[in-house]
Length: 222
Ligand SMILES: Cc1cc2nc3c(=O)[nH]c(=O)nc-3n(C[C@H](O)[C@H](O)[C@H](O)COP(=O)(O)O)c2cc1C
Image 1 (spheres, rainbow, N blue to C red):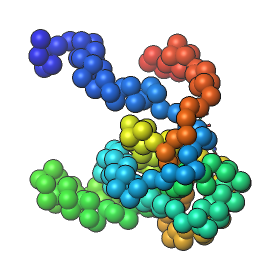
Image 2 (cartoon, protein in one colour):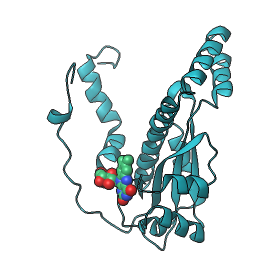
Image 3 (tube, protein in one colour):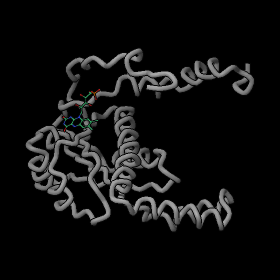
């Protein structure tokens, strides 16, 4: 049966099978502290995981994120200190700060791209751009916008690292102001997720239990 004619449930099963490796990556990804201190991420792999991160979905494709990679040993020492002594960052050899924009500063360029691709006419591109710029001027909305979009990019990065045989651990245990200052973030960008990433030195302890689907899935309303 072709995918077009299959019932929705059947399509879901077929999808699971055809992307079996992606599902496997989701199921086996782990955070951890067991990094090989003698090995480090090479430049090509660093760029590859960042490319995968940039394929995450974002509001209007605004891609409101930046990635700051720290690999210099002295600077990593500073990052460890700003992350309250999390030594695994040093052992990983690379720390990546996923940064979110708190305003729609890519809007000019991106709405032009919508228009050039014929996906919006000039008037709706202008209108949507004005709406998104205005919406994110509100401080709370701006922070939500940064965190929502950059978190999806961070998850892509974690899965890409795992699929490439690396270990990557997300962290929010760090001094937000301190790291913003140390990595020279402009005022309209906030640190969303710090990730230690590098070759693994072996297994992690067993995963802690997850809340069950029965417990977390609510049909139609909470
Ligand atoms: C928002 C967030 C913050 C986290 N902060 C830290 C952290 O500061 N240090 C750390 O070692 N792990 C941190 N973790 C990793 C979690 O402890 C880990 O994801 C959780 O225990 C589940 O384990 P798993 O990722 O191996 O499935 C964080 C994870 C998330 C999503």
